[in-house]
Amino acid sequence: MKIIFLPNQNSVKKFIKECEGKHVQQIAYSSYHDALTQICFNCNVVRTSLDRFEIADKIKSKEAGA
Ligand SMILES: [Zn+2]
Image 1 (cartoon, helix red, strand yellow):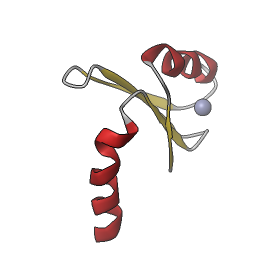
Image 2 (tube, protein in one colour):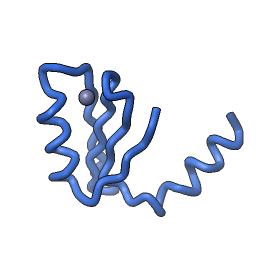
Image 3 (cartoon, helix red, strand yellow):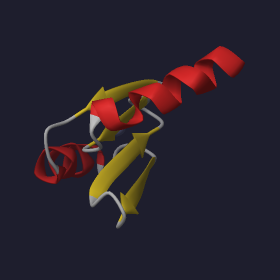
């Protein structure tokens, strides 16, 4: 699943609205990061307002271990 980084929560909400009713999606909100994340199984993407650089290292280490 591809991860798409969006600049803010409103951008994520726009995609949530687009997929709503058509696609199977899950929405996650992180109060710690104040970030919104959409997982859409039909688009096969994760869209998040999380900071790319903040999580890049963690993703990298996870992929290395997989
Ligand atoms: Zn979708």
